[in-house]
Image (cartoon, rainbow, N blue to C red; front, side, top):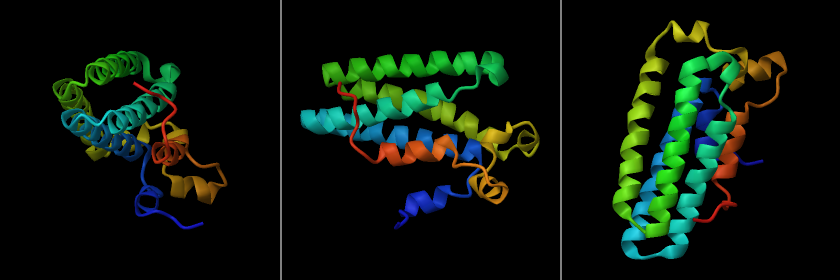
Length: 160
């Protein structure tokens, strides 16, 4: 199987790094949706919004409420809010709403970036969020965060 550049780059990334990569993808798809809305390209807007929904759904589904406590609850509420904003933006074909979602996602992405830079975080990250390289060495299966990358590159099942 031929690896994509992005897929190869993500292989040795930590769980937090994969979350950041998902946020980057979300920002990219939101930008694509905003540009498509600006151009009046309904199909491209729906595809980009759908991919954004896929990433948000994955982020929501992989939250660990048993480990994350209040921050996990706050992230769940954040994801629901962004989901609603994207739905509203897509229905109204409103580039400004997509840009608002991008600003919100960027703010939280920057917080994750700060977490990634903190060396004490590595000691408290659950084992299932360790790097893929460490999992392969230990015989574990691929991280579900890597699996969403592949699904983000395929057509979305959501329409907006």
